[in-house]
Amino acid sequence: MSGTLLDEQNLLTITEISRICSVQTEYIVELVEEGLIAPETSPEVAEKDQPRTWRFTGTHMRQARIASHLQSDLGVNTAGVALALQLLDEVETLRARLEAMGATRSR
Image (cartoon, rainbow, N blue to C red; front, side, top):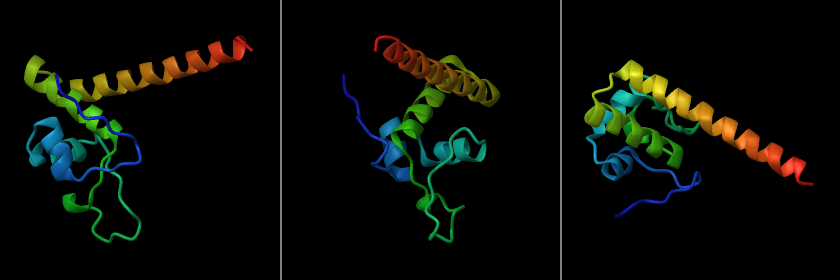
């Protein structure tokens, strides 16, 4: 079993995220165009629409991997992937809130 640990400070290029997720760069471009992931762009870069200027976080990498698995393994369409990613994000937010509430109560 192998994996790539990535924090939110280390940003990936489109080539790196594609390699890590075992997908073509065109697939990552598709995810961005569909609004499923939104790459980081720096304000000083004039070519924000150019994939070579995009940078991706660990969260983007996880979303791209999930999207890829949902589509290739389960045949989920783009709308279904978008819904699944949104719901997973909501679950993560709720878990964090519950943890925070638990930490507050134990004081």
